[in-house]
Image (cartoon, rainbow, N blue to C red):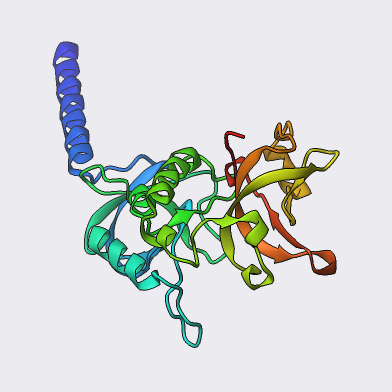
Length: 257
């Protein structure tokens, strides 16, 4: 009798394992806390969509040009980015993968997106020049891979990188008209702060705010005359100066001098 019970329990376990394997292959199984599958119902813009259950998903680690919102005009290539995402995911079942923080201040779910065929949607949007990297701590798991894809798109001047609004700026050409805009800026260091958490490219001050310094410890090893590329929002400083704050190590790319 005990042997019969063992055989029955073994048979039940085998059936369960077969069902589990089928679910994984079919894409219906999701690892709790790591990934899950959803169906895309509506694409809002190049980096946001809604699922069939009404959940709003924000593509993590990237940002696309804005589309028109009410009285707010859209940015150049905002419509093109939206159409690109629609072509890739509309009506499809996609897999969500998460980093440390899963929701933004607007209540949207933050996720990396994959198709059933293995296409990495966030990466594809960056690689084709429809998006730029936009990372914030502590969600840095995929940042390095995204930066590499963006560098390739920038080098080929694809999509947004072939427009005046998003093309890489020389530090000595950053102007007050750029205040409030995200930009990728390149230049040579002409001054470094004593604490190592700030420096200057031409007249543009680059700072690492105190709240983000733990991600840069030890301070970046920089020297005067070094060529750098930085990314972030251009803001107004004191006495008419301009500055750009770095929020993660991936906002700073060291280049050959």
